[in-house]
Length: 200
Image 1 (cartoon, one colour):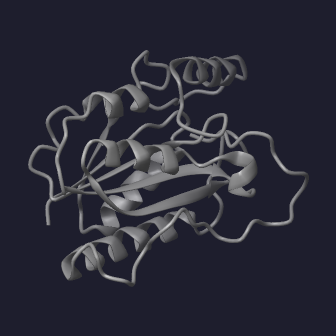
Image 2 (image 1 turned 180 degrees about the vertical axis):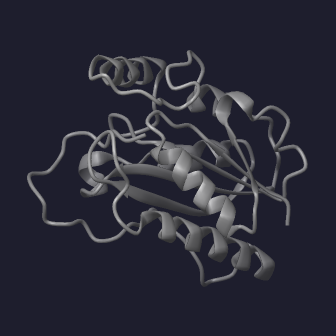
């Protein structure tokens, strides 16, 4: 199976998840959105993910705000293209149609109810379906705070999700078992509910 994991990341959390998923898929190629190019043309499966900002996909404004805030805090090591004008939303808009091709979507977000944080994976999946892709799974991976880090065990969970994706596609995308829905570990009972699912 030829799989490619395409991701957008601000603080490096989503990139780490993408790399873990790729490992679970058996060493799939990974690429940030600015470098995605034509890598998906021959892929049997594309896995697309990004951080949740303001209940959904990032915008050019939300990426700039997140990157500027991190720099003002003296944070270094922002992901490549963190404040680029064109991000995942633009890439999905311009994605060529591929009727029946397989895809999966994921996001990073705070550990709160998706009703409060939103989940970018839903918007990613909807846009993939618009271009003819058959979305076989969606998933959320959880961060401790808006800038991270990832919660303990999330990279292992991402790796396992990638492995299960590969197994499911070997059985066929319509197999009943396997990863489905926007799911995550039960919300922990730590502090008040957040108003935004910002992650990166």
